[in-house]
Amino acid sequence: MRFLIHHIGDIHQPLHTTARVNEDYPKGDTGGNAFKLPNHYGAKNLHAVWDKVMYEFKYYPKLPFNDKDWDSNGEKAKEYMA
Image (cartoon, rainbow, N blue to C red; front, side, top):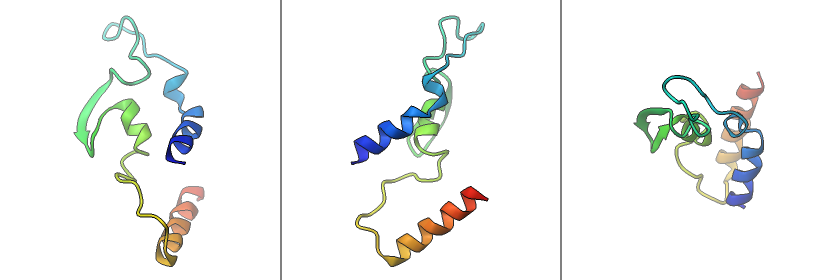
C-alpha cells in the first residue's frame, strides 16, 4: 500500500515533469535530485523534500490509526484545505 501511495503521489510530483537547466546544471538537475539541500530528516535534495511532504511527516505513521490519530489527521487535512 505504501508503494502504491508513493507512486500515486508521484503522479503530481512537479519535479518529475521538469529539469532545471542552467549554468549550474547544464544537463539538468534530474528532477531536483541534483539540487542539494541541508540534510533534514534524511531529505538531502529538493526531490526528497517533496517526497517527505516538506518535512511535515518525517516517519511513516504507526498503523493502524487509533481515534486520536484519525482526529489529528482530520485536523491537518482541514488546515491544508484552508
